[in-house]
Length: 201
Image (tube, rainbow, N blue to C red; front, side, top):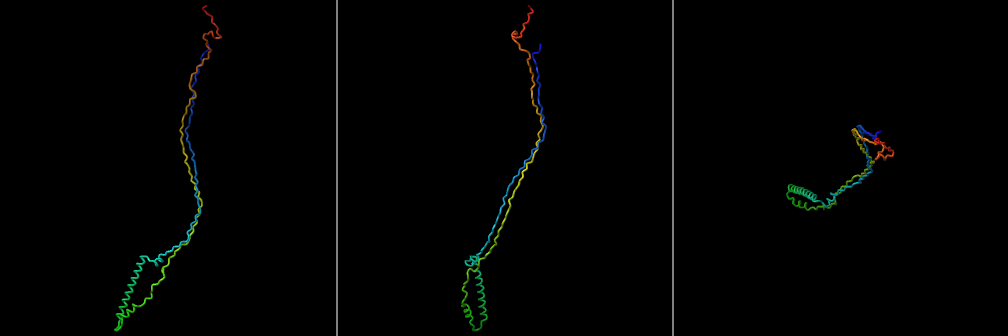
């Protein structure tokens, strides 16, 4: 009689993948920035300058308080000198007087002399002071400038450690197959049924 069952054993299958350790280098990126400084033409002109100092001119017409005080002091000093000289001269006349000489009359006659100086003067007595500077012109021309700025990023190294990958591609199993023919119940239903002989008859 042939066997009715077929038993097949399915083994375990797996894949083993080994990744070696490696050292990776990332390249650096370089960038450049360009900027432009515009030049140009610059012209600077300084015209002639005239400075007029009219202080003394106006001071001779309408003197300030300080000038008036100074002039009064000078006049007082001059009058003192003149009075001193007059008294000295009169004293000299008295010292040199002779008998019968009219000294007092001479002194009186000298004081009655007409002063021809009436104080007429041209005003102003001072003129303005003029100062001037020469004109000047300056021309500056500057070319455009280009500025280059390089930006270089440093590269870096990266260490990737090794690893082992295990993947199961087939699970273990046991396959049982029935390889016999069909079983009929009752056996007489089998088309190929052959009745057996009853040995007891």
